[in-house]
Amino acid sequence: MTTQERAVDQPKGSDIGAAMDGVNLERALIDFEIANARVIDLTARLTEFNRDLLAARSELGLAKLRIAELELQSAELAELKSSRAYRTARALGNARASARADAAKLLRK
Image (cartoon, rainbow, N blue to C red):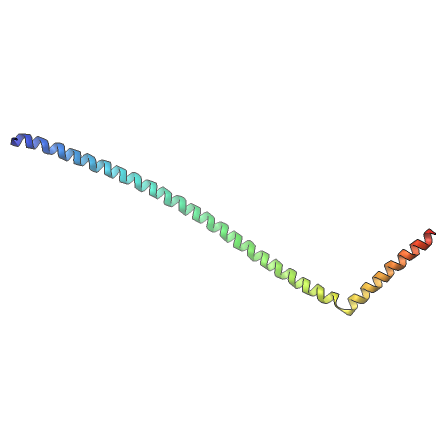
């Protein structure tokens, strides 16, 4: 092989190497864009799930507060129902309703 033939072979080899480098670089850039798109998508989904979680926690907190209020009202109502005044008023109310029913029956006869 002559010196001139070697000089012609070298540029062809380096052209192929440069072309391969270009293809590899282009492929690496495409892979980077795909990975970057995945990261952006995952970040958006994570942010949405985080918002949903915060909303659910807020609803849970409000529900717990409402349950505590209802338990307090239930305790107050139980205390009220166990009082002598309530029992007396209830008995008087029942007696009054019974008396009205009896009076209505008498009036019908």
